[in-house]
Image (tube, rainbow, N blue to C red):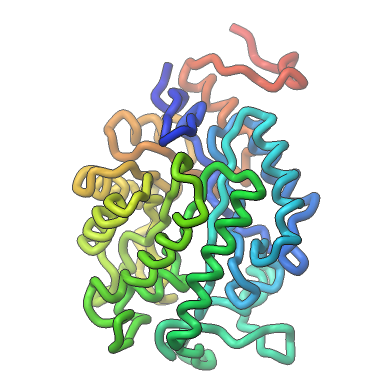
Length: 356
């Protein structure tokens, strides 16, 4: 059997293979509620054979949404719809997780297909929040600097969201601290200009993430996995970097995190990112080796051979795939055949399974 289709266990949860559907925003909710789109989108990837499936980033508060159409988990009424999705995904033999997120200064925008422009309050937008009054784009209005009360609310919001995630039945939770969103904004010196306990040196800049982690752990069962997604580098001088990512990963491991989901970028729009096949695998390998923690590799991984090679070379433990799953919801079923591995198909589809 290929490594890609070998099981992987974290705590009490076994993933039937190493293929993970990465969180991908759908911008298709109303007031944060899941709907038929989310059921079909996530359910079809479960039918397609993925071992672990993440929802898109779910906003822990209304002001934490990227757009007014983000999926949410900020109120109890969101639980039942999410629970229905969880139950179907699990019925197909997949594990389902959710990613808890707050957009910070990158909030209050239109969906990408509408241009991704900042929404003002008159157009259905809201005031954005950040560690410092530094906008993502120079001509944008300044975000509001979070004060002590605001920071405490963010922590409480993540904690409450984790409690709801448990009630919905999710088996993995991922804290989103990447891509220029709020927790990443606190990590990076580019966006964090504070001079209090949440800014300045490395220990202060990671403080909010660690406090959010502790709050989530208070609600999250000890036998279920916790992941953290980070941007391993900002790709700009003076920003968050690889060495800080390794240092952070060591601390997160000590605090009970089970896997680092290794992405990059998103902090500034002008970053020059050398996008190519597997361009972020270097980060999952470095963090896995130097911090001695399980990692997930993500970024332009598009075929079975690439994924197998990453695992064979011990560069990651899980393969996170995003756009390829948008192109091919049944990627795992085809990948198994490519790698000469026989995997069961859903009985409803078995008559179409290639033989021999």
